[in-house]
Length: 128
Image (cartoon, rainbow, N blue to C red):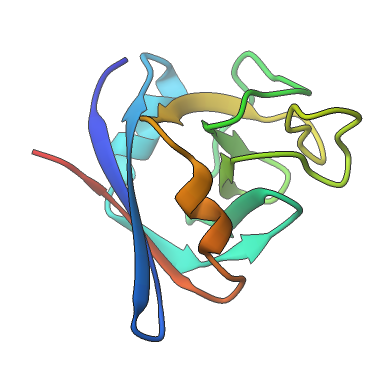
């Protein structure tokens, strides 16, 4: 894995910070070049996503991902964070609404992500 990033969600006086690493894909490089990214959290089951102002083509599209994966969803031009099952899942693995491009993964425990409510502010920054 490559570049380290920090994902911070804030709401009221609460916040959650997690670290992630980008992989070596073209999508990861495009995301890295667009940092910092920010938005408003939307949720779909145990997935957080938010629209980003970049449009990228599919790269190795996946219909099922792993817990902790970061992915780009071209249908919604969105940055996605998967931390459990979604409404489309048939088991414990996350299943996106449609194919996504995985570009990184959370480092360590994803449990804190379950606390983040829809509507929270989210910012993704490169760590130095």
